[in-house]
Length: 333
Image (tube, rainbow, N blue to C red; front, side, top):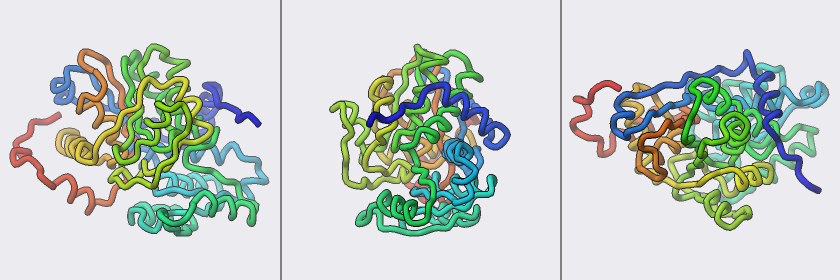
């Protein structure tokens, strides 16, 4: 049976559902970055979103779209962190119980936040167990609605509201860089761009260690890989989703990859020059732009900074490793 493909109208409806619940996050600029790269850069700061990540958009929309009976029974989700805490938070706001399947090695801050928001956390071993199978089992046994982190029409539509807001605020863009894990944010962004700014070149960016998206685009079919290891924990997936891959395949202009070292450089830039914390996954698009993986000189460039949920001890350690000794003399952004 053919899978129903979400469209821009679904993104527009999602924007209405989440209005008043999700933040309309700021778009920031940096004089230093503009001068360094010879372009106008616009950073859509989802690190300031409720729950600390863009995932709140899709989570809230998917829960709001459920029937009253389904909300009464509760939801189940699986996630390494951001979707987990955003499902928990969005569920609490809508009076819904949420069970979250999380890897036992998920960042401690994301586990704590998920529990603080009221989520019931159940752990699994990401290298030996199948989280999707565990979640499907709980959904069947307990009558819960399964809301996966990216492979769901209402999640994709909710994530698309981020690019919609960016385009509405800054107007014409030449290039848009979007972090790519499972593909929900990229697919939703493509739906928004197709309707609102068809000439924009959209580039998905994933960690070098987990390039299943790039492989899938090149082969024209979903490629499965072993669980990758990267500091971009929010993009550690083994394959794209059946709902989002057709959108990505048809509409994306390119998919590129960045190394962990390049992500650390981007994290350091945002901390030093723009005085904000962006998690490694949130730096994927910026790292690609900063390292010239897609031409941006002379262009108006949008980047979605997808989240800011990172353990402060980890953040401090990675950004200080091989930090330039002259950083204390850096000029403002």
